[in-house]
Length: 266
Image (cartoon, rainbow, N blue to C red; front, side, top):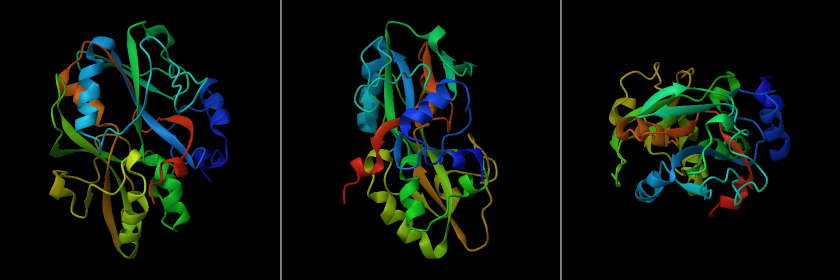
C-alpha cells in the first residue's frame, strides 16, 4: 500500500491539515477518495479576465470550480476556511513564462492583487473508476499520473493561448467503454476522454516520456485513454508569458470539501 492510499479515507480537512503541516508533499491521487480535487492557477488581477475568458472558451481542459477575490486566498465556494497559499503539497512560481521556483507554500510570494482560479481535476473521478472495477495504474504503482502536451490547440483568448495537456490512464480493452461512460458523468472535472487509443493521433511521440508526471506501465491488452488535464493553463503560461503566475505542481492538487457526487450529471 502506498502512502497516498493510506490517506484515502482522510477527510478533506484532515488531508489539508496534513499537507499544511508539511507531512505530505507528494501527488494527491488517491487521497481523500470521493473528494473533488482542483488544479490551480494564480494570476495578477490585470491578467485575470483574459484567463477567465480562456477557461470559458476551453471548458474541457479548464473547467472552473471557484475563483477567489483579489488578494483573498480563501476558496469560499469549494472549501470555506481553507488557504490556497498553504493547502497544496507543492507549487510552481513563474516569471515571464519561466519556472523559477517550486516551493511547498506560497505565503511569501502572495500579493494583494492575486486571483486564484480553481480548476476541475481528473483525480476527482478516480473514485468512480475504482467503484466500477477499473484500476488506476499510477495509484497502483505509487507514482504521479503521466501527462502529455498534445498537438490540440486551445481556443485563444485575450493574451492566452497554448496546446491542450492530457492525462493518461491505461484501461483494459474490455473496460474502455465503461471508463468513458463512467467519467462522462463528471464534466466539471474534465468528463469523458478526449482521445482513446494511438497516442500519435494527438501528437504524443513517446508514451514512455510524459511531459509532466511519471511514466506508468501499459500492459498487453490495455488501451491508452487520455483525458483533458488542468495542467493546460501551465502550458498556456509558458506560451503566453504573463509577468507573474503561480500554479500547483502537476499532480499536487487542492483537496476541496465538495464530493464528486456533487458534480455528477446523471
